[in-house]
Length: 198
Image (cartoon, rainbow, N blue to C red; front, top):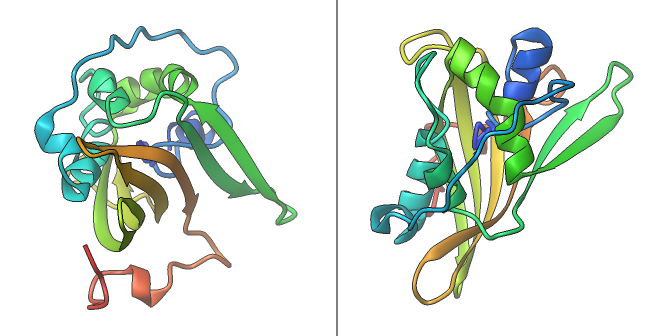
C-alpha cells in the first residue's frame, strides 16, 4: 500500500486529509465521511504475482499517479488475501503509539478522494527480504511525493508479509511506520547498504 499508498503504502492519504503531510500511502486517521468506491474483482496480472519483485513493483504502482488520474484499485486488490488488513503506526503528541487498522475497502474509500485531488507518488528506495520456504518478509523503505519529480515529503518503511501458494504470491499483511523525529530510518534500511537479499 498499498502506502499507500499501498500507503501503499501506504504509503499516506489519511495524513494528507488531516494535514497534507502523508505517511506511506496506507495509514492514519481518515476523513470523517468517505465516499464508497466500487472495486471490481479482476484476474491478477501474471507479472505482478509471479515474483516478490513483481508484487512490490505493483504495490507501489497502483497508488501512484498525478492528480485526477484514477488509481488501480482492482489491480491493487488482486495482490492480497481476501481479508487483508493494513496497519498504519503513528504517535500522538505525547509519544504514545497508535495503530490504525483498516480493511482494503476502508483503505480505498478513505484514500481515493484525496489521492485524486492532490496527486501522490510513492516509490521503493531500498529493500531487505528474508525468505524461508514459501514465506517471505519484506522491509521496503519508501519515499513519498505529491508529484513524480517533486520533493520528498515523507519516508518510512513498509513491513510486508507474503506467501507463495504454488501458483502465485500473496500479500498477507502490510504494516508501516513513518520516519519522524526520534524515529529515524536506520542505515541498513537505506540505499548504499549491501546486505539486501531479494
